[in-house]
Length: 350
Image 1: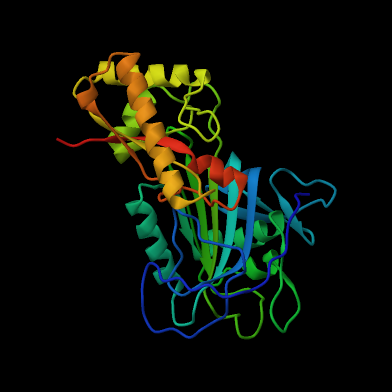
Image 2: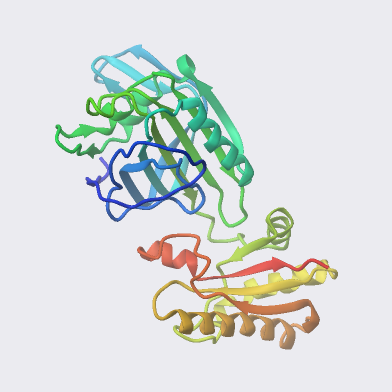
């Protein structure tokens, strides 16, 4: 059984997606935050939160069926509630960083409105939708997810409820799964919305969102190549490079970075019309001024290497540094800080 942790409520105010008059419903779990790629529905609160640096995740791609079964046999990835077995008919097994965020939405918002806002945001962010289902088609998803991925959610003034109780409802339920393809590692999302479940009398009719985001760990070898870089730059306008290493607290490039820098040289050779901004990024450890300076020195070191060692024309490269100002993960964890320390190649437009 995976180690789980219990979270409690505290106040953080966010406004995303839509705006409008709502009734206050409580406070965010302390120490939690929205995922940087997917903002929350307006005025909702984080009711439960879990972040695992690396784990397995079952991404549902079809109906979750229910059937009576033998309690001595639990087929993967099934879950028993009493004598009823819940198991996805179609799924994909993922491995990587897993973030599970449980939201409570203010009254007066239908699950369709909530779902469409998330769906539109995901599509606009480049996600490919893999599966959608609603009502009866996903009636058993909450039973399976809440039992297969359990943790306890404390409710103010009432008994503690499990995530299974929180999600165990088919009341106007809707499910979406999707993927954002990236050369540095795909990102998958599972979104489940409903307005039932056992929480407390004050919360039982409110919209509930279970948002799971899985950042697939990339392969250690073969990640950086001309094809993957060019594809990423053309699709998104930029690509993050994690294979360029620097001596601690300096702009001196480590010798182990040579294969990655060679691939960047090959990219520029194969596409002679391509011009790039080379942008340095740091984590948020230390002062802002120092990190911006360090990131710019590191970006310039990459440009100097490509120009002086590989003979790339200097008018094709511009170095800039933004320090910690454009994070892609939380700086509160080492895994997040490691993601934020990177060099990005950004396409220059004529």
